Image (cartoon, rainbow, N blue to C red):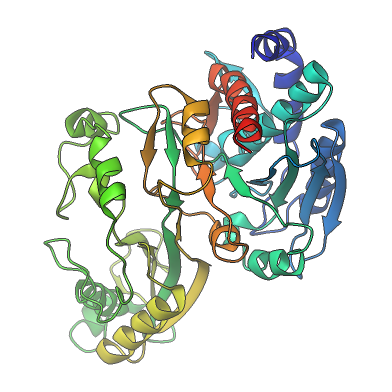
Length: 442
């Protein structure tokens, strides 16, 4: 590892330049902006890292893969990342252009720096460092760069099933999301699933004068608010019948891992300008492993200014995070039935869907990965966010370990997304250490 650390230090400027070049390639899967060029750039990054590349058509945006053989009999590791990014969002809230990487105060700013270009580039640079320093890799490696993660990876599981023979691997790793807010380093053993949806309630053909039509014309905004109030109570309980069907309780080992994670709730809240917790039950870490229902936005599409009208269209965008054992299909039907029962005229459109994923603390390579990440590293039973890891754990039967590298305040999905450069460089070293640890354990 001394040679790896020295290599990373000596090539730091080049690595930062490669990240800046990657950020400068827009890759917004939701709109298609830059996606073709991004797939080409992803392929080139794999080539630079000594991996044999392949662009796999999926029916949507392509999956870009790369493979390199390790010593005979060594483990085969799959590394997952995604090259698509969120839309930039309000440009006026960015302090620098979202697709022009800018370094300020030790951080690189730009869309995709932390989510996920910087983190999967750290993995690729670790592969490159191992090859350059030692002449070979400690294990066989296949990299998967998904082009559809930010839209729910609708084609990934089927694509991976088609690649089952060449993905006859032993273990999978990924780097995404921020480090644990209260304790680092950690290894995530799973992710929550997600079901995102949009509820639309329509009234008259156009907005109506609230004086001339008040108490006469139905108000879609009120109807939508009343509907939402039937879905979650003020005590934090989700009120949708059947949404939690199949939920699996934590094992004793998972609960022990959860309880070992320290957290300072007051400090955590203060960091984002809050002085109170949500009304759900349990500790902060328990809440992050439980199902959720969130309202992402509420809007009347035809009244962006304060006009005294009864709006014609009201829309709520929501998501539910799923705990282990829940299924997206069950949650979709539960939401659909609930809306139909309480407000039949409402329209529901489902968006991104991802299944939850689970790897147990005693699964193969778990201790090797944990030790490689750090002597004082702890397991996190599930990351609060969502990734399409079920395609690897359930679809391919692989134990899967998450190694978040980004700072807590990376602002992924928000304006001014950023990645602390010291974490980027340290992440390359950590990723190399993990591959060496897996190679030795095999």
